Length: 243
Image (cartoon, rainbow, N blue to C red):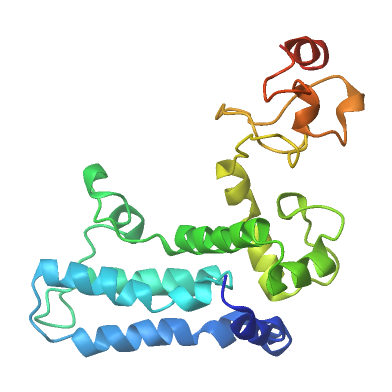
């Protein structure tokens, strides 16, 4: 997460953005277009183009996508410009046969692509990283501000968009499912983990506890352990959890 002094600027920015996010954030595609035009006409090898795309062009919108979910119009425009540049032979402006679209180019090289970024997926990944910072640094200024505003009685994973949310918070909520899919609690003494509604099982199919015992609501994982040592109380586990 950006530092509090930097992030405080963004807290008021949604009021400036208004409803037309594409118009305000459109400078990102203009920035990429401008950089690509500066490379046009130069003879650059395919390996050189790969480095320019990956290390320069793809890095230009990184700061913004750390905080905002870019409109699809902008991400598609950026990908379209990069695709044209990749297939441009550099001889004439008309020598741009698109042999493969960006979706296929963004596949790993082992799967027939070039390993370029899918900007939408990358955007969601960066926003999920911000949510992770909120979850793991609850005492930071940004975490306390958002918790007081949006999830005062719950945690980041179970937070909702709420009434009249800021553009930043709506962006973070779009990446919430990404964090839920990959996040797991590591069980230590179990005192910080709710038995229900939190992912702490190792299985990839369903990391959440299922049970027909309503009394488990609000109890933590240490309730399933022996009192004098960090071991599962097998009688309790067998009595309250599904097989």
